[in-house]
Image: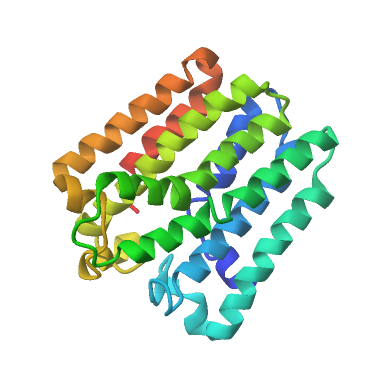
Length: 261
C-alpha cells in the first residue's frame, strides 16, 4: 500500500526543490537525497489521506485508483501514518556528512510542516471553508500557506540548511518557496476548471462541484492567472542575490505555473 502510492508517479517537485537548493549552496546529492526522499513520503501521505472518503472523497490520483479504493480505507490510513513516521527515520538514519545540528533542524522543520500550524491545520481550515459562501481571499491564502506552501518551503529550506546556508540565505529561500507554493495552488485551481481528467490524472472540476473556495472562484480565471504570475515574479526576486546559481529554482518557478497537470 505504501509503495503503491509512493511509486505511482507524480512530478516530484518537493524532492527536486530540496536538491536544487542544496546544489545552489554547494551541497551534494548524498547530503540532500535522504531529505528529498522523506519529503516525497510526507507528500504521498498527504495525498493518501486527502483522498479518503472523510476528506475529499476522490477515487483517482495520478491516473490510478486511489489508495483506499485499492487497499481499503483502514489500510490507507495506516499506510499514510507509516509513510510519515518512516520519513523522519529516513532523514535521521541516512543523512551523511552533515553537521548533526543541521540534521536536527531539518527534522524539526519537517515535523512542524505537517502539524497544527502546517499541513494538518491547513486541511482543517480547507474543510471548514467548503460550501462557505463568504470565504475571503485572506482565508484562502492562510489555507494554502499551510496546506500547500509549507511543505514546499521546508523542501527548499532543508536543502539550503543541509548544504550549509546561513540563516539569512535560508530566509530568502523560504520567501521564494512560500511564493511558489501559493502559485502552485493557484495553478491547481486554474487547471481544475481548464484541464481534463485525463490530463490531470485526477478528477477534473472536483472543486467546482464541491463548491470549494478557490482562487478562480474569488478572482475569476484571468485574475487567478495574474495572481500566479505575480507570485512567481516575486519568488524570482527573492533569489536575485544568488545570481546564476539560482537558475534551477527559477526554472522550477516557471514550470509551476506553466504545467498541464
